[in-house]
Length: 494
Image 1 (cartoon, rainbow, N blue to C red):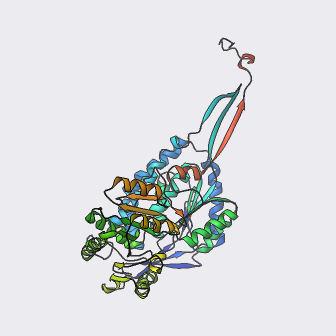
Image 2: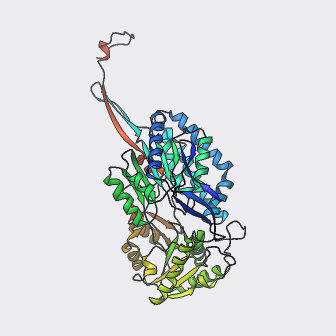
Image 3: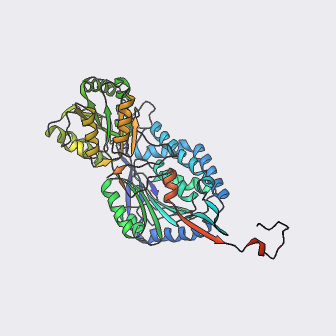
């Protein structure tokens, strides 16, 4: 059985006094155990990171970008290995895992431009003999706490910008799929990153709280559920840290009567059931406007019948298992709750049988849902798609804007005017027009509104660089050049 530990100062570490099981979700079998760091082990990582920061902060931009360019090349060379590691412990199909690696790679490529991204301003002669310029400087030791659903992509939202800006980084990945974090550490070491600039500390709440409490950690980035995001934000800011904490979601997809039904159905199936619905940007609610409801539901039902669910390593599989048996059972329980509240379970994922002991659950489609039902209110984080029927686009917009989450929202229509109004008025941080999962490209930034975000900083892109730096403004005065002891032969200005 594999033993998965930490990487501190470029060296494998871990006492394994406390451990958690790691599973192959497709087989339902334990394949390893991961060390859960003690407070002392977290402190050791912080101390090593502080020491490494002292030198790395002075590394030239050319040196930093060279490391990042080499890191990019190594990710490309090892992308199949990274995808396989994701599938082995998360369960998502290999094509989804490869897509995750590709989206993370985009963020590495963005950070390769750090010489341009850290350029400050300069004003000559702001006053007589006075120049003013700004410096963007690193914070120090920063930490990332990342979720199980994207064990490569989400860390790569944080790591490249953080180290490119001159910080030292400590990653606390999910204990459910910890191995990919060690692969990232190895690739960074191969890329030439000095030992201690990047460290991995496996763990649970004890490790998280120590990172939040330690005065040596200057900033924390978090992605996960809203209750934990709130805890991370409140505890971290109370300790005087910068915190960006991305929480949960209830992403809506509005389909207007003029929409292309086939396009909308394809989008709903891929966005709701891809990666078994375990995505923070997954569509979990389709809001149908007017008469489009019945043909759209019919089209979704036809497509679901052709969906192949199986182990992520099998090329024909389009959806894999859920992360754990407990999570699968929790997701399935919402189908009884929905029926008890008066919704219509058109497709029940529990009706599909699977061989073996894997954590599989078929996809579900629930109609006649209203906003008072638990299947609508809760973030289910599984392959359950709810359909809410409304009469007008204004009512659809009102439903989204009164939902406590504000992560992503999508509109399917052929009407440009309706699309412009939707993008202006919808209360969500990321908006798609005929795009069901509007994850921003790496040179923009990722983040929601309302209960989907705590703090005021989104992830990666320009906001990521801003989060990992602080600005210093330097005002300087020099003697009048005409009084210089060195005669350069220039005429004296009048």
